[in-house]
Image (cartoon, rainbow, N blue to C red; front, side, top):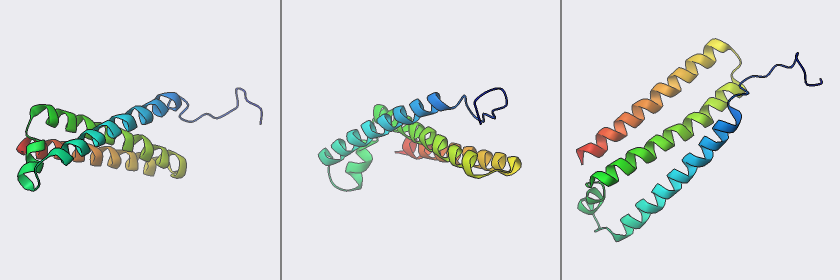
Length: 117
C-alpha cells in the first residue's frame, strides 16, 4: 500500500525520542556500573565496606539517577512490547499502567533503601 493519507501510523511520535532515550539511559547505566565496579574493587570486604560505598550523598544521588535511568530504559522496552503484541486497547492500557506503577514502586523502594544506609 503506498504511503499517503490512508496509511495508519500508530505511535509515530515515539520513534527518535525513544531511540535516543534508550541509548542515553544505557550509557548512564554503563557508567554507573563501571563506577560501582571500580569502587567495589577498592572497598573493604564485607558488609561494612559495601555499606560504606553508599554512605556518601554523592553515591546515593548517583545510584538514584542510575535506577531512574534503568526504570526509563525498562519502560521504553516494555511499552514497545505491549504496543507491538497486545492488540486489545483496554488490556494494553492496563498493562501500561501496571508497568508504570511497578517501575515507580521499584524506584521509590530503591531510594528508600539507599537513604537508610
